[in-house]
Length: 345
Image (tube, rainbow, N blue to C red; front, side, top):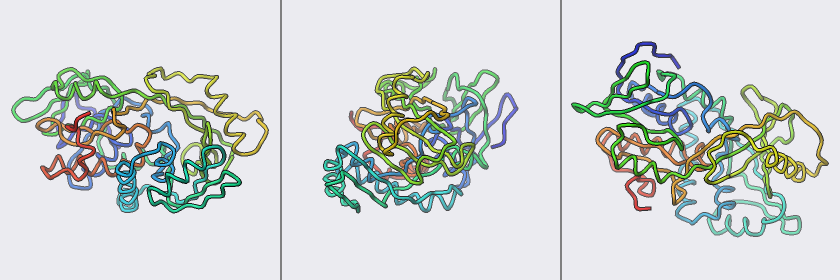
C-alpha cells in the first residue's frame, strides 16, 4: 500500500478505517476502477485481533440467529469464493467442531437454518464442513495492495461544492465520496447529525484472543468458553489462536489476565489436555455492534457512506458489506435492506 506524503491530495474515494470492512470496501472500489485512499492510524485494526472465521453455520448456531439473519451470513459466505479469487486472499476450507455442553441447542439451530452437519448426541459433538477461515494478518496485507494509504487519524470532515475534505492534522485530502469504516470510534468533527446519531448507537465490544507459535489444533474447535484455530500464514504461521471474549460496553484495550487464563483453561479442556505453560501473546480489540447485531452499510448523506458495526462477524460479512457500499456509491438499489443504515433500531 503506497503512502501519500503530500499534505494535500485528492482521490475518487477516501475510506476512513483499515479493518476488514474498510479494506474490503477499498479493494472492491479499486477493482471497479476507482482511485481509493485509505486514511487510518498506523497499527493493527480490531480485525487483526481475530481468528478470521468465515463461519455462518457456527455463528448462527452459537448466537441463535433468526432465519433472516442466518440467511445474510449465508449470502456473504457464498460471495467469499469469488471475492477471494479476485483479491488474492487465501480462503482455508476445514472442518469446524463443537465439543461439549450446548451441542443439542446448536444442532437444533443448524437444522432449523438448513446447514449440513454431523451430530453425535452421546458425545455432545458437532462438526460442519460449511465454514471456513482465513488468516487476518495476511488478508489485511492482500486487501491493502493497490490502495494508497495515509497513516493518520482523521480529525474532521467537511462538505463544500460537492466535495468532501478530510483533515488529518498534517494535511488534508479531498474526494467526492467518503466511506466511514472506523469501527467503534466516536464521531468525527464535522460529520452531519444523521451520521453522528448513527455512530452514537454503536455499542463497543471488547474481544480478547491469545496467539502462540504452538500448533494446538489443525482445524477449528469450539466449545464452552473458548475456541482454538490454526494459524497458517503471517508471523505466527504454524501456530494457533485461542479466543475469544465478547465484552459488551468495554472500551479498555488492555488485556484482562484473569479472563485470558479462564479462556486458556477452557481451551485445554476442549482439547482434553491438562494445562501446561506455553508462550502466548494476548491481544484485545474493540469492535462495534449495532442494536440489532447486523452491520450498517450504505449511504447516509450525499457522498457519505458507512461500513460499520461488524460485531464479531467482520471477516465473514466483509464482501457483502463492501458490495453494499459500492452499490450505494454508484446510486444502485441496496442489495441488503437489513443492512441499510437508515433502518429503524
